[in-house]
Image (cartoon, rainbow over all chains, first blue to last red; front, side, top):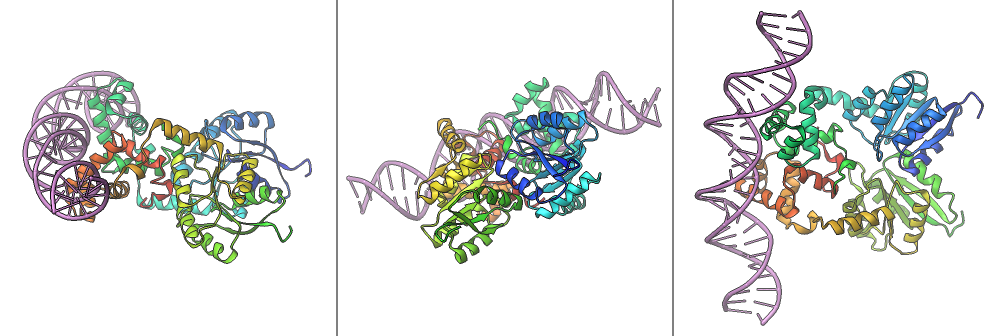
Length: 220
Length: 220
DNA sequence: ACGAGCGTCGGGAAAATTTCACGACGTTGC
DNA sequence: GCAACGTCGTGAAATTTTCCCGACGCTCGT
């Protein structure tokens, strides 16, 4: 490991996975893992203190998730190179991540070579997307599935978020200081815009698009 | 690695994670990883040919999932020792896994020592549950949250499954050869039994209990 | 054998929700 | 200035959900 090695910060809440990263990356000359974090807040702290050349980050993590961590790091350093490495084989997540400022998106099902290749690409300033996500993105294009984030107005999006999180129409109305009737109207309009017929389809769509994560199920 | 080493089969669809397992386990004397699989079907095949002392298995995998793989292996060999190692910090999954015949359930957020400890426990014939899941199980007990699988009759469960998968009440009625009215009645009864007020809560509950997985979102 | 209990199936009617049509108001952009 | 649009709300119709009920068949304990 020479002084000219590219420095890397690993972020993943699963220690065994970080172990796996290390094992794969250390076989590669020119790379050096200099720090590890297990959540977004820690990642941000370590980014500031270590100023690594590259961050490899998972998306689903307790507390501050990956997307938000990307946003914060980028806000601080516009040139930050962040590669998302996640289990979510989901075009919606990829779009969100890239928009937040990530420079790459690779799924964990990818063979180690794909990860290494993506690391090199991002370090060289290129955008790296793993083939399966390319395919997902193509499919969602072809299917013409409306992306909730694009089609909905801010207010509608807010209502959708609350619908997925809170319980009743009345509670949401109170939170938003509008009449329950308005919430019902928006609810109906949202389903219309997204082209779903039932609430169950709505939740499934939200899941696919990464608006709701399985780990968000908090109130158990 | 002596001839008396305990042999292990690793099952996880993320190659980097398998890399991590190996890295952790090979530091441990007396253990030897003899095979790796990336889905349930391959796991079953390799179990038959390799007859390992222990299987370490992920839950969410393409095609045949972890639970089903446990069931098959156990059906073939009642003495099979299977340790579930997964990201799902979810009491519902743990219950399902143990009922299917797994001998242990450890989350990926656990430190490597916990995994190693669990491996030893299961090899010694003990049941191993990681502390966070113990806690989850305790909580779900205390909250008295009804487990869908327990509280619902077979027919109700079937309707729930279809509600989560299909689209309209009428379609389900047709599939089941009953009147839409019956489906609506069952739907209402299910929500009552599970103590949820809306379809959205219903889906969230199903998600928490592992009845629906993010990867099941097929029809995108 | 028999009644109690339960799962399944559905009808009827009331209650609640969803949907649709419509109007008002403020902002933005041309 | 005015057209387009987002937001908020009303009223009435359409639909769904819920609740109450009865029927049928099965199992189980006595």
